[in-house]
Length: 192
Image 1 (tube, helix red, strand yellow):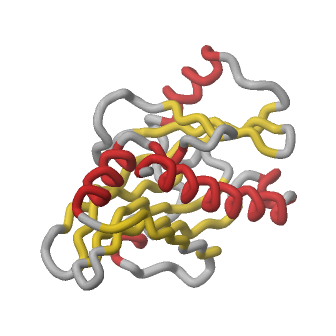
Image 2: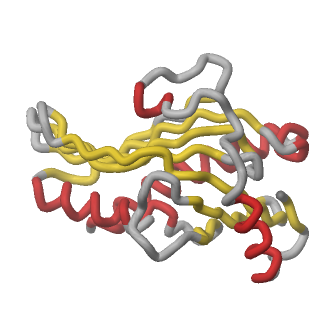
């Protein structure tokens, strides 16, 4: 949903109540976890090296589970203070191009893999019916045993869903690229 002014707390609460009843806005639920990205979507796989070693990995995982990748200024998360769990509904209030947008997603699954040459932590969430995009996003931290490097990995696929997002497609894509860039910078700050 788009707004010319920042939505009130009451409007956000009504939106939250509606969103918790929503279903996912796309059929390929869990695709980012399986690595089976549907061809018809925009793919924006981005990564940044955060450093090296187990301490950086643990620090980065803690930052991820405290939503530090969203500490970017023009996006505000509205979510429970509880730990991230599958089924949790998350609202995102964004401000881009002089418009506010309010969108809802739901956590699909957690990533906790410490077997093999790459340790991973993270989660994936997918958009609900009340979201400007139809998408899924995986947020993960990787620790590569081969060279001890630690990476923040952001894997989203998306299509515009809201009529304004479709109409302003180039601006929607610009906002997605900006989020990826700002999110990587936020994670670098979180571990420095």
